[in-house]
Length: 174
Ligand code: HEC
Ligand code: HEC
Image 1: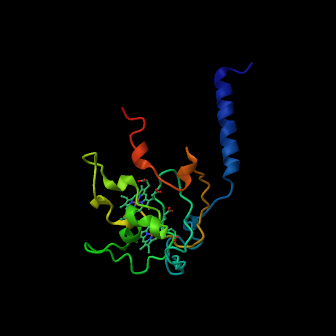
Image 2: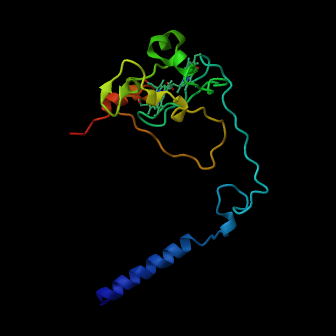
């Protein structure tokens, strides 16, 4: 009969051989990048052009959300809107709750009218939310280099198209 030690050694050897077979295809270091060009040379790299939506706000189709309470991405043209200044923020012009419905835009949610530091509800939108495109960004229509297999699971049907972070933020916190 085989001793325990020999058995362990034999199975380790088996694993080694099996994993050796699995990685029989080898890559040169220069080939390791996702781009199909020399990893160490930028000379032949041609970046894909950026193609943001040119469909006007009000006529675009919203993007699928990435997961429950993920910030939705901007589906419409933002030409001229992202020169945001202290005096002028085009986004609030359509997305503030009091105007959103009239223009068919998704209203800015409750979480943006809340001070996360003091845990207080605000009467005006939090200044921490002023720079919308820090979190909501236009998306360029390009083919991803690696397919994303992630599939979100939503706890409620509404979560697919609406967020409710402020209601769920403290779930599980005692
Ligand atoms: C002229 C009105 C208008 C302006 C200005 C505007 N939006 Fe929109 N936005 C809309 C409408 C309407 C939609 C819904 C999609 C559509 O009909 O095009 C929308 C959709 C969105 C969505 C997707 C919402 C969802 O439920 O998926 C985001 C995010 C967004 N806008 C962010 C912004 C940001 C950030 C700015 C400023 C850079 C901005 N919008 C400026 C009207 C506007
Ligand atoms: C610090 C990041 C951040 C900033 C800045 C920010 N948002 Fe959001 N936004 C989020 C996140 C995260 C969500 C989804 C979770 C939630 O409800 O807060 C969201 C949700 C939204 C939604 C979807 C609401 C719904 O019911 O589905 C709209 C519309 C929106 N934001 C508009 C804006 C606009 C317009 C601005 C600028 C005035 C802005 N946001 C600034 C992070 C941000």
